[in-house]
Amino acid sequence: MLTETPFRPREKLLEKQRLFQSIQRHTYLKGPMDKVTSVAIPLALAASSLYMIGTGVYNMANGIGKKE
Image (cartoon, rainbow, N blue to C red; front, side):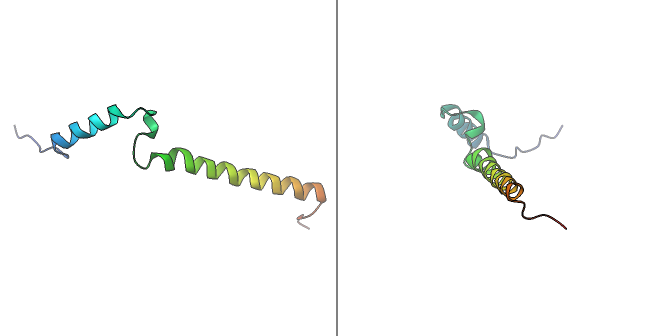
């Protein structure tokens, strides 16, 4: 049987495992770009939706922005 070469060298894999096991944060925040995907994007979506809801409530309260 032929054995395939690993995608990543074993030393690099062990180094990454040690790094991730030593970090005392939640699992979903351990990577270098995880704060962007787990925190910033949901906050941006929540802020934009609150802005749009606020604009809609203001327009309904004042009777503006209606389609004819």
